[in-house]
Length: 102
Image 1: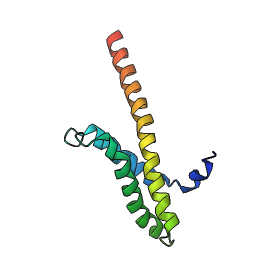
Image 2: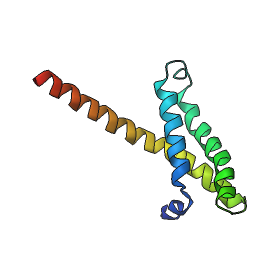
Image 3: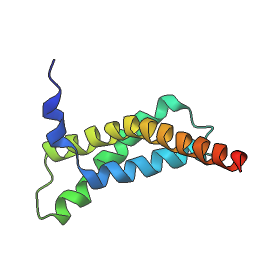
Image 4: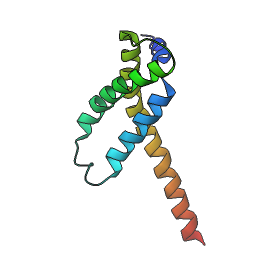
């Protein structure tokens, strides 16, 4: 099944915002009690709501398509967050290793 059509729904500014929020949820101690199973749903809802001002700000009309695009982008941010965390942890591990070698 080709999922390539979903790329036309991704909105970079919504992706970045949802990525930051989901990363903070995982890293801030009092927010980390929020179960991982809720993060994708929260990001879909956040993406949906963020699509409203993004669409209106670009001079467009809020449509079902723009709302779905925001929700899909929010969901995509959860996968991006996992890749982002792996990248950050690898970078931190490399930094710590270099510090121990000195």
